[in-house]
Image (cartoon, rainbow, N blue to C red; front, side, top):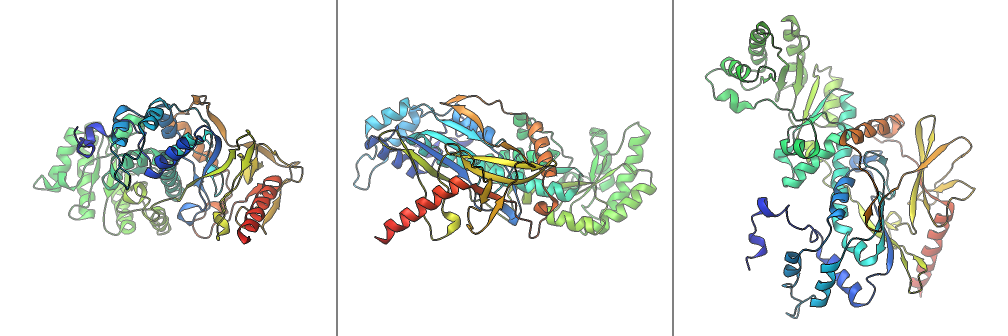
Length: 498
């Protein structure tokens, strides 16, 4: 048999089964569940994060459509089982019995999955996904679900922050060349568009996800010719309706003058110069001088595109310097979430049935209060006032919501907030996606998700969206769920002391 690691990656990796896209301990636990007759014990897991990325006040949920596609096609192929059969124990024996591999061969996804729709603004401790079903399936899905939700949520949030700083001006994503591999590039382009970007340079992402693609030329095009002017003329001759000229190969302001000369030739032929791009130097100063030159030459409608390791903070700084930039090209710092490489999402069991079919609620204790997970079968209820979102309640669907309408901070039990349901409107955020393994949810178009992000951000108070020391949005446990959590903590602490 050809060694598994010798497969031609670009031809085979993403066409193969993805059932083994998991951490090894998920499989060893699955085997132990099966070996002990616990595989079909019903359980509940939640996927959530503990702190907002980028020291911000919110995150943007993203990645659900990837999860849907993964679960619709979840199965162990024969090549997966062949590989698992080669794994040895520490003693040199086959780690997995043939009967267990036969069990995996027949395994079909049969869980319930509820999720917060993509494009929703979300906050720490809220379940983005709730999955319930046989514990062996819930366990096997931990790593792939985290992989798909964590990264795209991170990038969608970064994109939203950059688009807020651009104040409505188009943001163009072109981070593919610096992205973390093939899938990282595709996922980043999708999530960046959902977060608010106008287009991507990633042509494959454009094909797969229906994202507008954009781009012009690089410095190598200019360097191919004897002069910059000659290069601009040749480009305009080839693509007269797509002319944004990169002007900083030699001297940026001289480059603007050359672009203007070619722009006049385009105009004489009934065409329009779309704009110029600046990729280095003092972007504020050059853009101001370029705007004057363009306007004096009659090109007041020409865009000035800026790039060069930009992020939300640099965009805001340039705006504060009165830069005359009208479009923003963002690459590395968006596609790689440059200043925070991961969102830190986790996936925790919160309930499991006992041998008699009764639910037992579970928590994991920690010396850090923030790491004690919430028990139960959770739902998130969002409260609104005058079109603004004002608070989120995490409640247990078995216990419901008490008349008190008080929420308790998940990580600081001294903090609580009273919600006046006489004034506030509300809705539950987690919606059914799969029921007993059958898809019941119709994923929205990517443009609908992008529009949802815009609406969601408009519903947030400005203080939550600021970059430095944002206001903390109120999220808390409903009274009965809070009481249950305290009961479990005290019970386990008492057990520890004995």
